[in-house]
Amino acid sequence: MALVSATQVASGQVSSSVVFSIDREDKASRIVAFGASFPSTLDVSPNGKEIAYVRDADIWVASPDGTVARPLFRSADAEHSPQWSPDGDSIAFIRNRHEPDLINPHVDLYLVAPNGTNLRLVERDADHPAWSPDGRWLAYESRVNTMDKSVPGDASALRIAFRGPRARKPFVAPRDYSYGNPAWISATSIGFVRTGHGKRLGKNDIVRAILTTRALTPVVSGPVGLAWPRWSPNGRYLTFSQPKGIFLRDERTKRVRRVTGALDAPWTQRSVWSPDSRHIAYHRNNRLWVLDLGRVGGRPLARGLSPWTVPSWSPDSRRVFDAQAQTANPGGARQ
Image: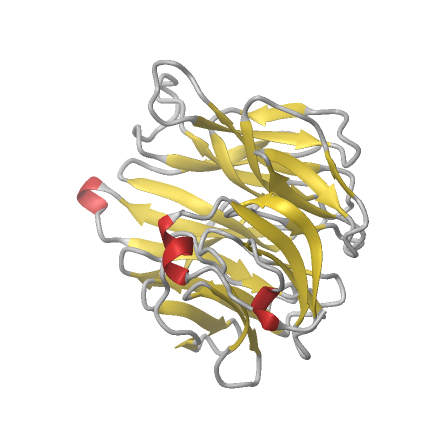
């Protein structure tokens, strides 16, 4: 079976893909949906009964066996990055908002019910939503309003804001710093990347914040390119991306080691933990890989993937869902 070449994938020559799932052990694959946007972002619902993905610049949902696929709604704007809430009652997503006087679109954060109703704006100029494990809070990057003189920061600064049962005061980056890539550690603590600008250029680290005290604690320091911290669901491990690869930190021993080779696009490529905290899915060299804790090196599962696509796990940690350039069979695995 001929696959789309890595050159075609990297150059953006491919515009359509299939959503598929693949068994992490025997590599048995199953097509879930055709016609997905490429690259496509997707997320599996907490109960594993639906997959949210992008098709024709709209958010669609499909059943894992591929028998049902439907759009949540239709929009003239481009939507992407769906994220299910832990209770399965809402899907957060990003909408690209174009304005005549801007070359690049704004990105706004929305919520919608899984049946396509109750569409509502959370915040304009917001990106990278992340649900807390208990579903009470939604963290996201939000541009600082530089017209508000009470808020420190500059035009390039980002803040970590929260929207939940009660609006929570955001973590605002001080001048010459920006905050981004939020990731929850527990229901009461969150981590994110702190990047230096201007006089602080080159000062980059991953910090941990406690919601009640708002105290920031540096966890890992590194060069420019430190990105995408992701804690395992059990809180034992932290992974993060750098140009040299994905790194793993044991939160008990504080030991840090590199677990993959160099990444194609470290500013987008991130690790995705399985619900049982025993496996990591990631993209590298236009392939889907799985790294099993306790084993040395990752195992390639499928080819023809984009570094801008983020995989998602089934609730039982057995299968990985992803989007691949339009081919008959992901990676040549059996159906």
